[in-house]
Length: 254
Ligand SMILES: NC(=O)c1ccc[n+]([C@@H]2O[C@H](COP(=O)([O-])OP(=O)(O)OC[C@H]3O[C@@H](n4cnc5c(N)ncnc54)[C@H](O)[C@@H]3O)[C@@H](O)[C@H]2O)c1
Image (cartoon, rainbow, N blue to C red):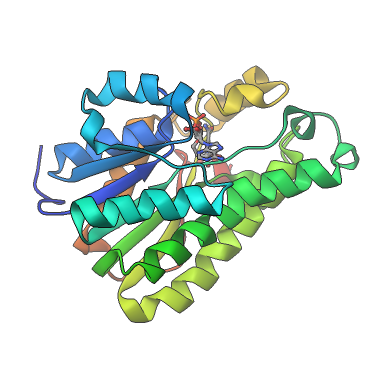
């Protein structure tokens, strides 16, 4: 417990279940005194989220592939909470066929969907937050990326390209939102067994190889990612802007 995030209200987007990285972020931020709001993709995912939080009042539906859905959710947040201090964007999706074999399997439609949901959505969300003047000064936006953005990881394919676009979006958003006191950063997490990862062909091998390449052969946890997220949300991180911070126990080094 601590008070690093006392008096901060933070929106967490992307908790699907207790294994979600967003849930690790939420748990640590809550322990640090943050007041949390959650969005879920659709009714099906709401149930699991409600089981975890036990508080329906702080949950709102938001499908980031739909501008109206983002606008509706964020207006409702503005009405209920006024200004907020941060957003955790822990959202990605690519059709299963994009996550196997070689990159030449990619399709125009699959590529568009992956880039739309996994990269453009950060811009879409930031745009609406700025239009509604939803964010305090200072505020912090944190997204989740993976080193498949800079390296050719087996089966990661289109998602790697989406993560490269996401990291670039972080830099452009950081440049443009900085004047309003809004910092934008990404955490590049190590491989963790979540719902999203099970969509990747050969994910068991990917998880095992990643684990073997950490400095102590133990996989990074969602709470360890959450620790860095809490730091980035806090005023201790006001000098960290437009960066990608690796939380992978050294996998990217070795
Ligand atoms: N698990 C890993 O190994 C790993 C490593 C590095 C980065 N990441 C990234 O972390 C983030 C969170 O993923 P996770 O691994 O916790 O998996 P997860 O399956 O628990 O979370 C993914 C979330 O994305 C949401 N989502 C997908 N499409 C959406 C849409 N259209 N609108 C709203 N929400 C949508 C899902 O509902 C889900 O809550 C993703 O960006 C992922 O790429 C994961």
